[in-house]
Structures are given as structure tokens and as C-alpha cells.
Amino acid sequence: MTLARNPVLVFSAIFVLLGVLISRPAAGDDLAKPASWEEFAAYVVDGGDLGGWESSGVTTDVWKTLPAGIKYRYRGQVSLDESGRQVVRTFTYVDETGKLLSSGSETIVWDAKSGIPVKALSGLDEGRPWSASGRMVGLDDSKTVFSSEETGGGKTYELLTTVERTGENTRRRTVARADGEETPFVQEFTRVNQFVEALAGWDPTGTWTTDMGGVVFVNESRWGADRRCVTTTEGVRLPDGSMNVTGNGIMWFDPVAGAIRQRYVSSTGMMLDGEVSAISKARLEMRYTGVDAAGIRLAAIVTTTRKDDALTSTFSDMTYDGRARMPAWAREPMVATLDRK
Image (cartoon, rainbow, N blue to C red; front, top):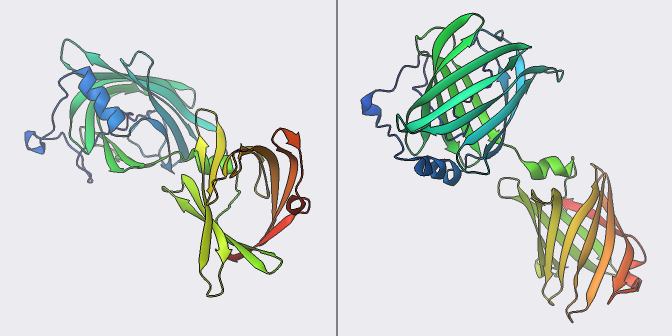
């Protein structure tokens, strides 16, 4: 189908006019061609086009191997291969029930003869094979345009594919028939957020308070970096309602280890590194290791459960300087209540 034909799946992008009709870019569009593969690869990598991307929408009749009007969810991965000589995109489309609609791959390499990037695509649309090949029309700082000839459903036709950089974590892809027939296929891509996916519905954000003998401890956790991390500020609430900050932390997803990590530093010099070992919408288990203000090694497992607007944290397997030790303050669960979202 090409339902996924991200002809430049590098998401470096390719875009042709966006209108009812999309035609070949004219010379006045000021699209250039890279002078070498190295220049093109740098365009893709430095432009943030690699990684996982997702989208959803409804198919159109721009391809002949997949019917129009099907609601879909798209997932694609763009990478530079180990040799650094080709950009590869793999993708799938599924319908609302999870049934596979289309799958395939796209490879972009340098054609020494013509001196431009070229691509080849192939896959299956509802079990029917399709194939395509194409070459770059040009690019600028915000978009990339490829022209391709595709064969499917017994027909061969030319498509223009434009991928536009609409934001740091967003792209828009438009696929249109060069002859102006059929309805262009437009997709709005969002970079896959591995952190949010790994959280599995667990939401640590908000202002949480814990009353310990009349002293109110405050934890303010907020989304950051387009929901790709959570930053935390902790401290003691003062009589005037302000907070005396005693520590700061950040939680993020480590794609290399495939784990959620956390780092915390206190005003006394305590430093802790945490790694989530189990997580669900209502429960998080994290293993902490680090040192206290005196540089003594410590470790513990903290299990936090959520029920409505209350977080209950329980400490276990705590060690201090390599020896099992459970201080008095950690022997009983700590309960934090949501002060405000």
C-alpha cells in the first residue's frame, strides 16, 4: 500500500505543496540536493529524524492495494545502519482491533551515478505485495521531497512524498499522486515516548505532602521535556507556606538499559540512583543505591502504591555500609497525600 510509504522515512521529510492537489516542486521552491551521502546522513541525524514514530488516522485512495476509509494506527522505526551507509525504516499499520493492515520497510542509499539519495520500498498490504522505488527531488531545512514509482493492484503510478519537520518531536508526511488523482494521504507523526509507555499508567506528578510529627514534607513532581522526564523538588513547608528546598531529582527512561531511572541529590550531599524493577498504574517498585552525606554506601527497595489521592511507600532490603539496617523512620510505611495536581 504504501500505507506506510514514508518515502523518506527518515523523517527528514518530504513535502509537496499541501492542497487539494500536490504537484512537483518548482525550481522556485529552492529545494537543494545533498552533495554527498555524508551530508545527507548528517541532515537526518542532526535533524532528529531517527527513532520511533507513531500516528493514527484514516486511509485514502492514494494507493490501490489498500481501501480508503480504514482507521489505522501506525508505528515506525527509523535508523542508520551499522555501516552508516543506509537509512532504514520499518513500519506496521494496524486497524482498530489490532489486525495487521500493512507492513514493510524502506531503505535509502546513495546513488553514485546520479549523485542523489535513492530509495526502495516493499511490503504487504492485507497480504498483497507492493513495491516502490524512488529518488530525491530535493530538501531544505524543514522538509524533504522524494518522487517514487509504485506498482500495486496491477497499476503503476508516480507519487510525491513530502516529510516536513513541524517540531522537535513531530513530523507531517504527505503522499500525493503526481497526476493529481485520488486524495492525498496526510499523516501527523509524533515521536514515540518510551518514558510514558514504560510508566504503564503510573503518574507521579503533583504536589504531595507528608506530615511527620508536625513537620510537613513536600514533594513537587512535574512533567518536563515534553513529558519525557519528571522533575522533582523536595523540601519542608515553612509557616508562610513556602518551601525550604532540601533535594532535587529527575526520572527518565534509559533506552539502552530499557529501564526507568531516577537520580536524586539532597542539600546535605546524599546522592541516590534508582531503577524501576516493577511498575503498574497503581504500584511502583524501585531499587535505590547511593551514598549518604558522609559518603557511606546505602541501598534500599522502595515500594509505592497509590489509592485515590494517597501514596504509601514501604522500605525493604535496606543496607547501610553493606550491612542490613532499617532506621526507625523507615520501619513504618510513609503516606503522602495529593495537595494539588
